[in-house]
Length: 123
Image (cartoon, rainbow, N blue to C red):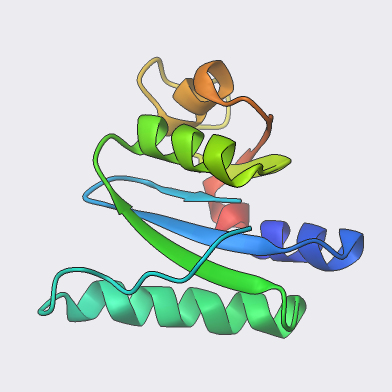
């Protein structure tokens, strides 16, 4: 996430942190939607932490959206609808992307560029 925030700050772009409920995270300009589950304290805490970290790097350029459903389908569709230029996503594994990974699916489905960074650098 910090890599995405740095890119947003350096290019004077907006950053939307996307959280897909029950799935993996993707990052990539949109509106804030609070988490739908009223009792999901952990999700709210995680989103607030991401927002604070990203705002520290790219002040005034960070928003958040919460989606549900198939992660690759929802992220690719949201990026297309919002006219994103770039999706930054973390990938686990250093040698190659797993066949069913979110990053691999986004590389196939997204209508914009996808930057895949190691998961430890993305968070």
